[in-house]
Image (cartoon, rainbow, N blue to C red):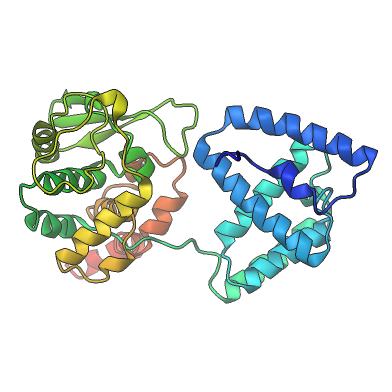
Length: 341
């Protein structure tokens, strides 16, 4: 039976490579690498690599291209075809990384190390630029005012208490959906002016070094209300309620299943729609993270401040999320402001 985190790198080669002795040796190397790679990576990373590789292998079958070793010209053909059907820069970057990864695993030359690759890639980037495909898609922001609007519509049913706690904490901590659903009650520590939340592992912290985020007293009160109603005194706090619309008691910590990241996005969209927010159907699980970043930048906090508050490893995405907010605080805006006072 195939596991959802199996890379299927070797399986995908069966229909694209002849069965010769050197190909058998290649398959053996890849099987050994795949086993080691699975132990070193998170399930989410494994699923992403598997999905990217299957897209690439499917293209190789249709185009009659041998996937390993891949020439830089064929890599450019693959990416060009993906760009033509609407894939964006971030997706193409991921495909390149996956193909390079498998080549290294197979101990084969990296196609992007060829001298011609830089020019081929620049051509692809130029075509992406002409249709606006280089900038990453941004989740619509869920601002502090939007959060307040949603919270006012929620009652005291268990599902309302859970959703209120989840949405408020997403805004305070700037957590990604995958980080939010793994938070446990024992991750909270009281500080002088609120609560600190330990985020023990994230998308950009696969080693589990952890980071700490802020939780306001008001949000902690919402979490306590939900946990008290559900009988949660430790362990995961954001769990499924099922069909229960009356009283709900959480199972023991060892039997709890956290909400999935996609369920977080559905909760946000559903609650935003019921609160009458515009474009609620476009919101994602990242919308609270984006909205809080914009709120902080518009309040005059630095990019570094926001980067630390949200656990970003680099300022790049903070700049992207806050382009409009930063425009209102840049040097020209301050200069014009002084002259008009």
